[in-house]
Image (cartoon, rainbow, N blue to C red; front, side, top):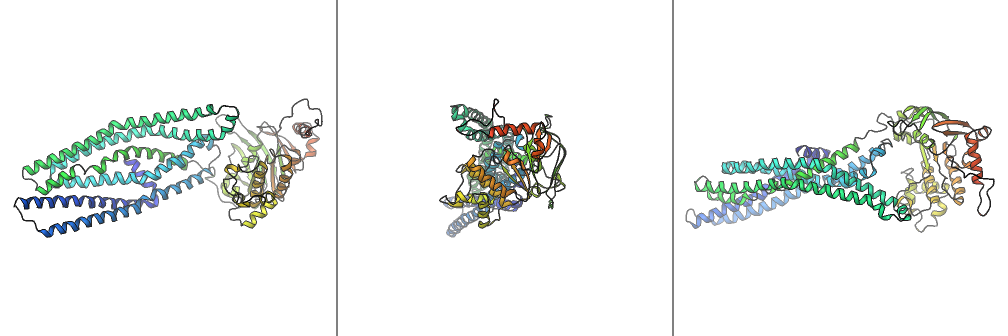
Length: 600
């Protein structure tokens, strides 16, 4: 429990002083609450002695006592306000910094990290679980530290007034600590399972939403819910197991303090009966006996919550300490922008031994266009990903501008790249902000100019809100061609010297294709261009074409050179020519006895 508490204190970082000052305010706030009880006990004793004729009560003491009570109440509210201002907002200030840190970590890890760690796990950690730490962390620190600090002070006070009462309180405290230690052990043992199921549930829900359209089209909406229902059942069982594990130990904790309270009263009565303490002390001890432990009685909630928070911090640390792909990189400004691969071999799972690329070498001079073609799964996209250092090679090296990409940080490397993918992702924001993502500091005029060059301005001006139109989640309010043109506008605005086009026109209808081809021409002018495509119009004018098959480059040359050779490229061109010769309402241009195969 103490370990988890210290981790939370360390988690507050630069706000630690405020946390400590808040605890100091809380400590004196407790005594400002206790002082009126002591004062009332003393005044009642004076009234009783006056009634019995032992000692006459000075009426002025009643007024002085009333003023003292008012002062204590005022001090209590001042300290409460001070504690809340110092301490309560710390979690809300630290958690956003942690979320930003997680975001910065995730953009620097290799893509293989997302194969090992599920999206649902990351989502749950950065939102739900960090939210629990944000809401409960400071409350737990305050409850445990101030609960036990105040209890220690009260026990010391009881030893001064009546040693037997002090021993009774100390005995109850020791038994309570043992019970809470057991609660914390149970929490550490059972909480990770509950958190794992929470993360699994987040992942299942994401998967369900993404696949709901497919499930409905097959009439299997109910079947798609089964994984979610199974996870909900396991989560319920995990949480119930936690509660059942806590209950008997919580009972011991609470009974220990109730018995200790009885012991304090009995000790006070015994002391008064034997003349060891005065009447006001008896009244004060009786008043305190069932409230002195109230602060630490609630620590049973803190004990199991601290186990919860400890596991959450383990998960946050696991993400924040994920190895960066560019941990040894430097910020190197590139003056040249040619690309070279030297004997590159790569596999997505090194332990599996299945190589995606094997001994790949090529040279793409600056300001030239290189097209990469080949069958599905041949390694085309992998080559582009290695150029941008989404992954690191197993063997060989990738050079950009004469520098091994492993020498550079991801930011300094990717500053030189713009990429347009087949599956465009747009943020749930305005069209203008989606384009501005290419260069966040761009003015509205610069955004509009990029949009005009990418043929985006043509349809944006027809929209009621123009550039302020929200595109919806993942761009759902726009057509595929419109999204593709926005992604090209984004790349145009960035104006990077190297452009990667990965099947940028593969899923575009003929009407949009001419517009997008024009936009791509604007984007690639004067740049080093790597094109992954299967449309002949896109690749036949490339300065060089690389034909990839089985993870190796089996042919290279210009379109004309490769057409003059027997091999994969010529077969690819023949298939594509016949496939692209089909026309609506007519016969195919050529005899296609075999169904054309996508050779990309």
